[in-house]
Image 1 (cartoon, helix red, strand yellow):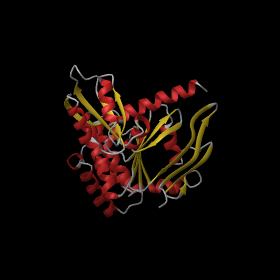
Image 2: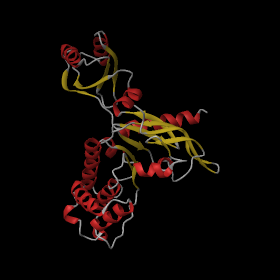
Image 3: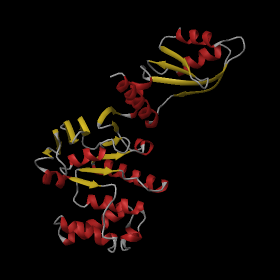
Image 4: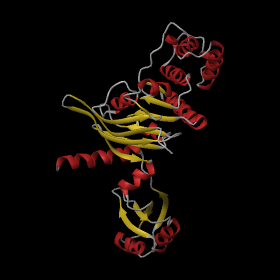
Amino acid sequence: MSPVIELNKLSKAYGNFQAVDGLDLQIHRGEVFGLLGPNGAGKSTTILMMLGLTDPSSGLVTVCGYNATTQPVEVKKKVGYLPEDVGFYDELSGRENLMFTARLNQIPEDQASHKVENLLQTVGLESAGDKRVKTYSRGMRQRLGLADVLIKDPSVIILDEPTLGIDPKGVKELLSLISHLASSKGLTVLLSSHHLHQVQQVCDRVGLFVSGKLIACGTVQELSRQLFSHYPFQLQANISLPAHVDRGQLEAALMRSEGIKEVVWTAEGHLEVGCESDQSSEIARVILDSGATLHELTRKTYGLDEIYQRYFEEKKVYEMVQ
């Protein structure tokens, strides 16, 4: 199946400043993809090129089969875009703003009215539809923005920093809504953000962006395995050792077990074990047989914050030795 969004060696320079540098990326139908990185990393510039709002210096970007540079109008028909700051007519109500957008998209009045009512309900604004937008909170404006981009039934939604300035409750509601829309309508969603923890909750895959380059791409689990262990199962044990057993003895006992490939001690004194398959029961048996007390045994996972920090550190080391 062809990707819905495809970037091929995409670059954008402003004079001597390289905003986007040789970006290769494919995003498929129904996928929620997070483009993550600090402010100034090139995320918004990449989005503008996807929308045909700025031309690349080199490379190619296609959206829904259309060249975004040479066929920007066709791309805009297929894509709903929610910028960081949503613009509405503040003196009009939410319903009136949506009706205005429907008319701009040449949707017949009777169809538009029905669609607007459904969308207000979808985004949870049915009770606020007749209130002036100037009275809306930031979170309500963002939900109205989602309804606005859905008016034309897009195949793709691009969201640029959608949770910025929203309180925690509003963030949770908005992310849940985005996830629901992607799964129920089969939408492809590209979500740009520097809030890693929030994006981790809804994205199928993520791309880590630094200085205009995509330095890593995959699921959180894939990136975690690439960075933190060569083995698919990483288990962490919280234990207490008796006086007659030292760490070296326990390490040796664990390494004699088939399937256990790596044993290390963390700075906090926990035991981390890398395995080809889940060896939880074997690890527990060896620890208890040694006379140690096992307080907790869990599978170690890493969040996007840890993953991003590790990639960022490795990139800095790489640049220093060039």
